Length: 456
Image 1 (cartoon, one colour):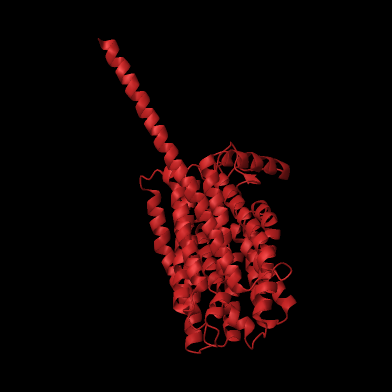
Image 2 (tube, rainbow, N blue to C red):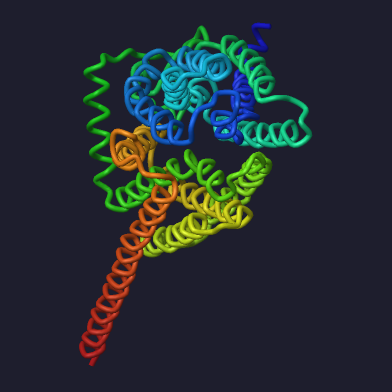
């Protein structure tokens, strides 16, 4: 058993089990009909303008503390916390009905979302560098598989009337409980990226750790002030790169718009087809869009290895594809055909995943693991700040409290603005690159003429 626990497959398998079971959520595609139906008897306005905004506020309020605690506690405790919060979220959704209770449920789900950083960082400290990419690929893939399986399962259970919504929630509770047990069995890492660093200045992205003669890893503990100072220095060094800054700005802005769209799209579907059976295909649409994400991400990953001058063409690419996303959102908003709405949603989701995968690759190309984690966290924090502003002004009942169609008009216009900004910036970059090239050719030509004159 000791030898089994020391092998990289053991923590990877447990983390994959946890990642799969915690993302199988068969009720998620049918959350709006569940909340607004006879089970909870909430109105669409209560769900849209009072309950859903709490998730954004909760996510923002706990993101930074969870990020620091994740590293300080060495990942596993926060993974377990995520499992506990997910169990509480499902239990509140099953056994409570009032608006305040549903707001508490959304707060717990904000903790779940913020704790994702622990899931994606855990492998870093328990797997050697040569196996890190493989283990990371497994842990990320099972999550996508879990989301897809949950959507398919939910679609089957609803379409064939095999389970009520309450029974589906009980099934989800069982799966979540098993996931929680798997998280408790994870080995405890001995090091982390910031607070429990390896000695001799070794970076985890370069080496798996210096081993002592007794087989243990050397590590050093750093104070909170030292970590904060180091994070600030790394932050300034990372964003001093203009290219990285542009990709990061797009990342934050696009992720904000994507999250808003995904969070409220079911309300739009209900508006397009307001009937008792409007949600009958929601699970299938979510499953199809998730399956479409994989080829898009694979294509983006392949593009990352092609000989493309991203410093010249990257911003124009971001602007162009963001424009297609905006067009999809406008069509989704104004169509009266639910199938067109479904199709444009899947297109929008695939476009975002294509671009975000390219952006991640470009940003990670020249960064160590620690700095990539910092940039990843900073970009998501920026996205969440923008999302909080939009939610508080546009969605929240204490702000404008707009109906769903005006909301999506704003989201589509938001992506159109992103498209214009990055397209203009991309065209300027291409013009500047061509001008520099022409000037260089002119200088080379003059130097060649001078050399020819000196020959004679």
